[in-house]
Every structure is written in structure tokens, then in C-alpha cells.
Amino acid sequence: MKSIFCLLIILSIFQSEKALSQELQFDIVGKKMSDYSKLEKKLKSKIYEADGDIIIPGGMAMPIKYRRQQKGIPDLIVTYTFTKKDSLMYEIEYDWDPRNFVQGDATPQLLKFDQLLINKYNELLASLTANYGASKSKGELTDLAKIDTDNGLSRSDTFTTKNLETIYMSIIMSSHYKFNGTGKGLPLHFLQVYVNQQRK
Image (cartoon, rainbow, N blue to C red):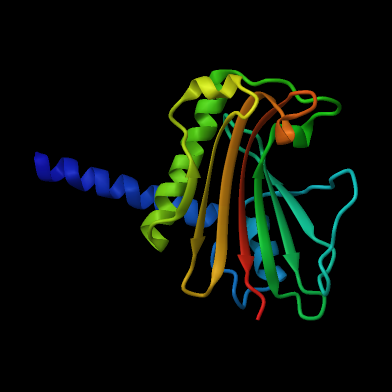
């Protein structure tokens, strides 16, 4: 009975890892935008057109954004930045942020929402740690009372892959976050992951 229970746990972890590997891509060296267009089509994502100015790094084409439906947390916005010359992938940004879908000022979120966002972060952190080893981390996600402070509850982690991609993930949750400790406090509740290929 004990061996069956252990097997079920292993299968559950494997299925979770498989689903995550399909959702997020961390090995971008040598990959082209066409590879990710096929992936987004398979995932039934929709092209997302954001308002506002877009900063395009030198030598890069216009970034392409997709929107993927999620459950319990904001829909995922995926931004692909790739070279203009040969469409090689340079950076992928994964962004779970309710501000992407509201006009005007953002509103504070319920604690249940923040807990789901924390669960997502911890899921990503566990998967990345299993694949790339320990991260360089800052902050913690245990003291939920910090959500109701100007600095909020936050954590960030940085990984480096064997292909020298940099993976940076961060989460901030605050009912009234103050940038640099000044100004009007604004609600912030987001999770972001950047996969960046180091330029040679």
C-alpha cells in the first residue's frame, strides 16, 4: 500500500512537470518565433494587443503578445521578443497581472486571490529548482500581513540555465504599494517570469 501511495505521488509530480513544461518554455536558445507561434496555436491562445508605447530593443522585431486563459488567477500574457534578422528568440515574458484587463486604477484583491498567486509562484519555483538547482532569492511569501503594507509581500528568484539563459521570476502583492516609499499607494498583485538569452 505504501509503495502504491509513493507511486501515485511520483505520477502526480510527473504530470504537473509535464503540464508546466507545455505551459512555459525556458530553453529558448536556437528557437524561432515560428516555433512559439505553433505552440500558442496548440494552446488555443489569442493574439493580445496592449495599449501604450512598446519599447523595442535594438535589432529586434515588434514583440508579439498572446493571451492564455487561466483559472482562478489572471489570464496569462506571453510576450515574445525576437530578432528582426532571423526571428531567433531573445526573450519571453510571462505576466499574470489583473491590471492588463482593467481600465483606470487597479483595485485591491481578496486574500484568496493572493493565495492562488502564491501557489502558482511556489509551483513554478519548485519546478525550476528541480531543473536548474537553487536560485538566488530575495524576500519571502509566508507573512501574509505584509500584503496590507506599503512595501507589500514580495519575492524574486533568479536562475541560470546550462545554455546561459537567465530566468527571473518575481511576485508582488500589496493593497497600497508605494513606489520608492512615496506617492499614492496603488494596489499591486502580479507574478512575472522573464526568460532572457544573454547576448554574446
